[in-house]
Image 1 (tube, one colour):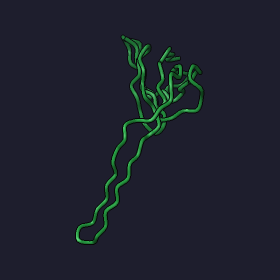
Image 2 (image 1 turned 90 degrees about the vertical axis):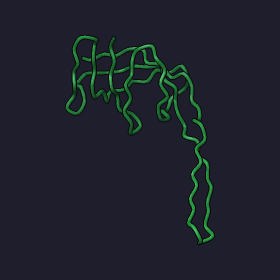
Image 3 (image 1 turned 180 degrees about the horizontal axis):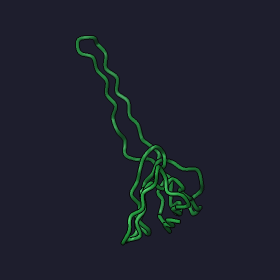
Length: 105
């Protein structure tokens, strides 16, 4: 089973071909292709290759499935005895990507 660890949007993800992942928002339309060149580690099922800091020539390709907003989180700030309380909500945007192929170069 091949897999790779990629870096995108300031986060790292362990990805496998044929699976769906929610990653921070990427530009592009649904059905479009996306390429990840920041491959930190890769495995073809028998050997593991690590990059210093990235693997040269390695590439992960995927297809954008949809864009959306994640579940709402509540940000609540309060200072006791100071009559200070602030409640705010936030929904982080994401792009759902299906990983098509992993090339380790």
